Length: 97
Image (cartoon, rainbow, N blue to C red; front, side, top):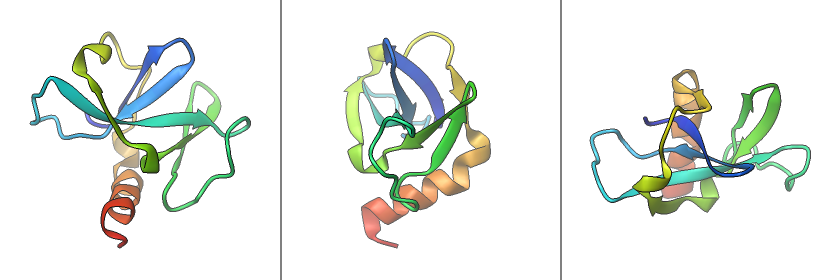
């Protein structure tokens, strides 16, 4: 589930960033904003991710805990191949490194 992308409401995509081992009533996610309509991207903090031919910016600075019940069904995308870049953004956001 970590680094999987879900549509939690029409047009609203989020990526699960918390570890799979954390079984809680909430889930920590980061929103994915289409690059063509969103704000200018902050490169290290907002990795770009392509989903279904559309480029999105992962807004790590807008982490949120949402009810785990919103994360359901089949993910739109799985991004384990982007783990290093996502972890780098999370580390920068949380510790400045």
